[in-house]
Length: 308
Image (cartoon, rainbow, N blue to C red; front, side, top):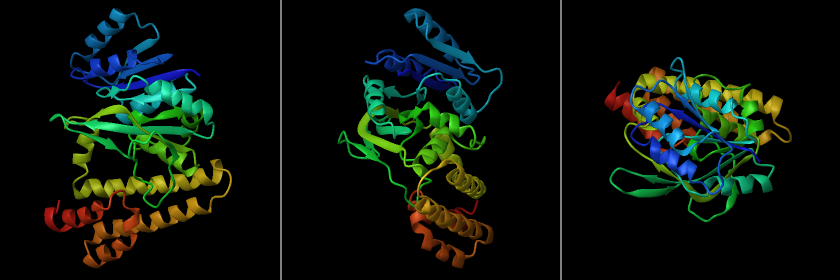
């Protein structure tokens, strides 16, 4: 199979070389590496160009965007440009285990029912601490089941191995406000094609300047939460169309989950708009829909303690 790796890059001078080394040293080398720089203002362009020249990586391409696209669009358009049968999304600041490509390719070859394969990760922090997630390391292949809290993306995009067919289908449903990993996760989940290999094939760097960390902090205010609810509602409606047009077989469970989530999002929106404690108590009926349970308590905190 042809393997493509796609990186979204922006001001990555601090960690980019470690990530590139981990790609270059794979036991199964990628057939294509596409790096899309979204307007770096640091030394990233010089570092990457020198790296490619040093190692003679002719099948690695560094592309500098003419305008800043934002990381969501940069990732999606980059992956759509890939020519591999399997596409791996890659951040600029992580470290891949040397057999990541080899292990995931072998699994995908043997299991054609998988549209998106993810793996465990090993989070590592500036203080040296580490944590494995989202499941225990058992070296098992497991299908991820659809549940009411389907909005939770358990494994980030840096762990994803995506069939080209899923990426092509995603063109119909992607919107600028959708993160690439969230869209692909949910499309595959609702079509029973989402699987996880429970081994940590990547070291996921956790630091305060990552796009994930910055966006998580920005969500901790009332306006941002309202915007998130609006996006989630459009996502729910999109998934309903997807199920009815592009998912075959029995659809009762998928529609039941979406119906419950539609009620949860409407109730959560009502709580934020009215700030009525009674609406918050009613919201507790949908506890199982929250991506993380603590977010229910977080709603009360934002509305009655932080108040902004």
